[in-house]
Image (cartoon, rainbow, N blue to C red; front, side, top):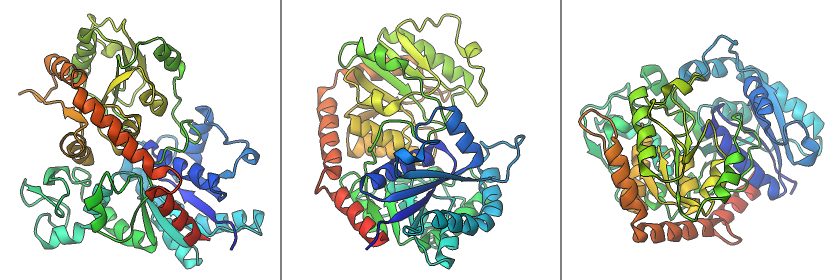
Length: 445
């Protein structure tokens, strides 16, 4: 059998690119060849952010290629509907020629398998017509994948209508031992009818992928794997902590600062690449961090514009903290100075926090983040939730109270370290996820 050659195609957002890049590096470590297809726009962003390895493919088994996304410089690439439908209209006709060109460069190692993240299922259709195997890497929890997989059942049971709207506000359980979920927090809620129908169609298209790879472990979400035999846990994807392929510039000076802090003393605050605080909540958080009188690192994103300096209240000092626009999160969460993680509970952040053995303060914003919070607080019991007041805001007092509760709870800290050990054992030699990945590689040859 030959060496597998994977064409990997992430949807162009940080939460999709990062885990697929981690998987690519892991596959390369196992001797596979990788061609990663970026949009031209994101490839330029990654180059300008100083992402390692993009222009020196000889040093790695990972090679980068690009296609245009069909959008102009004036288009808003933060609008998922615009990006998804533009890519779907423009890229599919160009992919066969790109595959032909890549295969011509590697005559003895043509592409054997295409791996996509969600929204890029059209590439599996192209590959299927060319006789190329396909797989999905789901960029969120296996539980959220199970939810999307069960859309037809949810419609048949009258829980949602044919446009994805809940028939009533209620909590449901997809199967025994899965967390209860509020129908208002289904992954598609708030996206509109067009994107819901895209998701329905996408889930059908993704069935052209024989495996649906999940950045999780059987231990973390055992009940989710009863939903479909396609689900394959290969996580945690923790192959590298560099920013190869990332298109956001990391501020690494904080690591030297962390080295100067006492063990388990620093509060780390980050809400991912897309969640943003409204100005009032931003100011309350700023003053709340000040009032803790503890060192902190805060990845501060007020909105999608670049002008954040005016958002801080006049009385904010911030003298004990470091405020960054983007951070080397994995390195931070594995640093002994970190005491806890105030997180939006996005899945990538959840996995990275678990693998750092760090207790969580949960501040979910939307959709599956609320289910992830349920895992953290109610099932794994490695964190506490932050509760909103009557105005829908998380108050300074709530922040101060929950930080003190969490840092004083040695049981949660010990449980966090134990969960880290269980989770990381999946990716050692002979571990459950390692065996799954090896079987996947053998299948892809």
